[in-house]
Each structure stands twice: as C-alpha cells, then as structure tokens.
Length: 193
Length: 193
DNA sequence: ACGGAACCGGAATTCCGCTTCAGCATAACG
DNA sequence: CGTTATGCTGAAGCGGAATTCCGGTTCCGT
Image 1: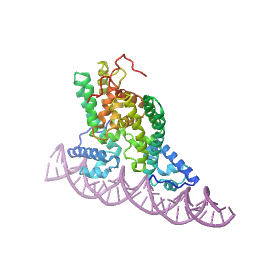
Image 2: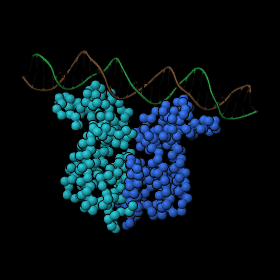
Image 3: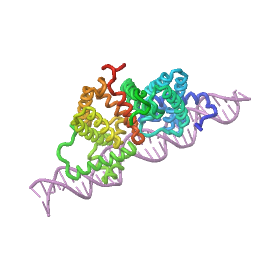
Image 4: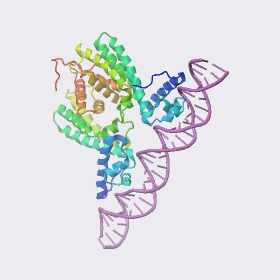
C-alpha cells in the first residue's frame, strides 16, 4: 500500500519529479532548515502543489529516502550478477556509499534527529535488505568475509561511513580500516570475543 | 575567553549546575525537541534563569559539549599515565566511548544537523585533541598501531561508533572491526593505497 | 539586621514555518 | 471545441517555541 496507482496527469508527474529534485537539493544543503515554501519555488511551483503530492514534510523526506533505496536495490541487483563474490560485495558497498555521498538529504534523514516515516517506505527498505543479505551471504560462504559477518554489519559499516562523510572522500579511509577487520581470521573460524 | 571569571553567587552556581543537568537529560532524550521551558522547570527554575546563564539554546548545548570534552580530557590524562601504550590507547578509546554512550545530548550535538558553537568551546576541544595526539603517537611508535594512524583516525573511529550507538553496545562490534584494521600490517611499514 | 548588587520568575511578545482552502487553470477525452 | 475531472496557486490561518523584560526575591559583606 505505497499509495499511488492510477496514472497521474502528465504535468502532475512532471511536477512531482521537480519537487523531489528541489527537495533533495535544498534539504541536502541546509537540512531541515530548508522550508517548504523554498522547496516549492525552487521547483517553480506553489506551496499548495507540494502539499497536493506529499501530505507533509516528513512524507516528502520519506519519499527521498525511498528513492535512494530503490536506486540502491537496482545497484545491488546489478552487483549480484557479478560472478566473483568479492567483486559483488565491493561493488555493492562502494556503489552504495558513493551514491549516498552525493545525496546528503538522504544522509541527513538517516543520521538525523528524527527518524523518517519508515512505514511509508518499509517495502523499499525490505527489498534492499533482501538483496544485501544474499550478496553478503555469498561473500561469507566464499570465505572472503569472516564467518560471523552479516547484513547488520553491512549497516554498521555504512552508517559509520556516512557519519564520516565530512570532507571529500574521508569515508574511504573509514571503510578501508573497517574492511581490514572484516576479513576472515587467518587462524580458524570463530573470531575472538 | 570562555567568559565566566568572577565567582558566581552560591545559589547561582548551584542553579547553573541544575540547568546543565536538566538540559543534558532532556536534550539527550528528545533532542532539540526538548524546549527551554521544559528544561527550566525540570531544573526547578524559571526560564528567565536559564537565559541569565546561557545566552541562547545553542550556547546551552555548547556548554554540554564542553563538559564532556573536559571530562574526556581528564580521562585521557589519566590514561596517559599507564605505562603500556596499548593499554593507554584502549583505555582512552573505550573510556571515551563509554562516557559518550551515556551522554546522548553530546552525541546529538556532534552528529546532529547543526554544528555546535565551536567558538565557545574551542579551548576544551583543543586541550582534548592535544592529549589524544600524544597517546596515539606513543601507540604508533610502540608499533601497536599502523604507522599511518593519527588523531584524525581516532576521530574517524569514534564518529563511526557514535553513529552506531543505536541498540545497547552495538558500537562495540563496530570498534572491534575497526581496531582490526588499525593494527600494523604484518609485512612492512607502508600500508596499501 | 541593613543595603544593594546579583539573581530569579514567568507572562507577554515576537517571529516564523507548516498547512489549509476557496477559486482559477489546464490536461484529457469525446 | 466543450466538458469535466485533475491540478495549481498563494494569501491567510495556526500553533508553537525562543527570547525579552522588569518587578519581586535572595545572598553577602559590614
């Protein structure tokens, strides 16, 4: 029940896109300080139109997050096609983080003070989660990730990286270090406590 | 120029403490949603009194951050006394993160949307930075941290951990993985690109 | 136990951003 | 073209939180 269904009028669809773009832009740059009216005019529309498409500000933010999730899912699906499990995993990890780096509205929404309206984008989130799980599992089985690594760890790494997206490419260092700790332990199968 | 100087009246000092405590409490629990009036009454005082002590909300938040920096500096200084460089580093890292875990107002301020009023607490920050640098340097020299590790990496790790302070002790996993990647490379001195 | 400087209280003021809604415009379809 | 369901507008309404202000109160030194 993600709403929609029943084709929007052509102009309406176009406007919806414009709003999303403007919102991602402004919310990304100034966070919640960006106000609805600004977003509207930045999209060349009236406030009323924004509210015709999104019930309130939070829903607008949720839509942006959903967007990125969809894109990420597509990326993940593509990565899954790669034959080498290591490449699949790294393509997913870096591809995701690179796209996230360019979308500060998304980052703000995830790291920010108030949680997004998860209920509005539960599906998208779940879809992404499923693919990530598969890719991670394959990498573990192939022995390129320590045996106790799971999808939650993927989230752990990406959240950490997102928190370190301050200066240009700062996060890569973070991920590098993290990946080191994620390799299978040379000795046996059960890593230390 | 951190202001103050010239002893406050006994009751004023007491009230200042109460405000800080209440603020750390409420801002930690509900973030910026906590309002000044709430903080005041939670401290058993009037709003006017809060404003007598802190110019505005941001200054109040800055004071809380400064607090934690001071405490961390003290902790770091104590850790520095340890003879074993490894122990010193780990005491600092875990001690800091544990205290931060208990202070969500601090976390929110650092990770949150709007930067704190750094100018108001530049000194405290610098003081902490200096000690951290020394401890890190000693650990590197002792060969327990990879040669290119520096204080910025310490920040990298702690930021990442803070971003992962969602469920109880979640962050420990993050730090564990991170520490793995921070060990000196077995082979030589210059880690890969 | 007095005087006044330092403090405190909290209603009133101000400011500001989200949201609504009645009236006008336009795409879609015959 | 005419009709009509869809969309669009933006000024006005609201609510709510930060900050101000000043009469009343409390410490402290003498």
